[in-house]
Image 1 (tube, each protein chain N blue to C red):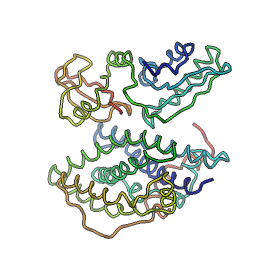
Image 2 (tube, rainbow over the protein chains, first blue to last red):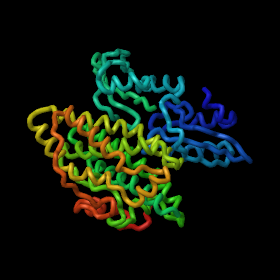
Image 3 (cartoon, chains in turn red, purple):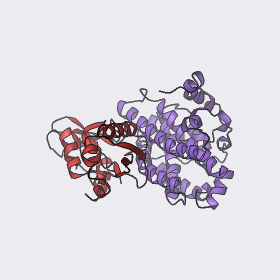
Length: 165
Length: 250
């Protein structure tokens, strides 16, 4: 987890408590939206990056970070940065597992993602029964980062976290 | 302040804002639940991109002129979006045709802007192009489905393409700001994208079993602030709250 090298070890457990309001099981660290967290003169400087440009969760996440740090006794400054652009590769292994357990299929690699979203291949596993016999219902789902799938075996609909590179 | 840079950013942002507003009108009114969600998701991406541009523009202007002021408090003549994006959601074929004609252009512009010497613009472009790839996939997919669908869907899709075609050429008529800014390597002169655009669009139209319109008569004016009749209605909707309750906040 190379990205964590720019995250101060004191701040790590505090930031770990902050989650994405739209996917509450996933901490913002596992989501990969925290790009930097350092302490200077007793003030915590945090840099976060949006998953999608219009992600309405970013303002809430920034507020939640400020509140969590205040609670832990830190003054803080949260800055939104755009470059480098967020990619689903930054979701950690633990994050991917949390997504799956929550009922959201984790992103495939870019090639496989394209194939499933074009309806050419069945590669997305149903989060309910584990079957690969699934189909795309809509390229856009309940939030900007997800597509909607349905399982042909158990008939359950589920979200798929789209690969973003 | 660098006026050309400021105006150039507004050009990029206004296209996304106005198209985002048009798509937002479909919230709860899409033809099916899935397309409703898709179109409003696209609107959300476009509005997010708009915010990034306006925040940058606002930082150039200073004097506490905020992103909201830029979005909500200009008059019609001060918006410099192209005519294409302000055209109404006549029916689903028009919505898809407008989206496809704009997405194709948007992709080409963002591809170039990723190389911008201005770090903020290249960052916004690198972020946005990932989203616009999805938009393009959605609109070109529907174009093919409807064009290569039933007799009626084909007829409606062709009519929408024919009708909106007249707004495509304006995309490639450079404004003063576009000319100035492309020379410095910050932006792109749209003229250089024109041949590629029409090739790209024609290929997808062929795949969709649709004819490429032959009309050589084109509308222009939006990029200079001279808009079609539809723009005033759109703005009155969009600006209502800020006009009725100046400086209101959520």
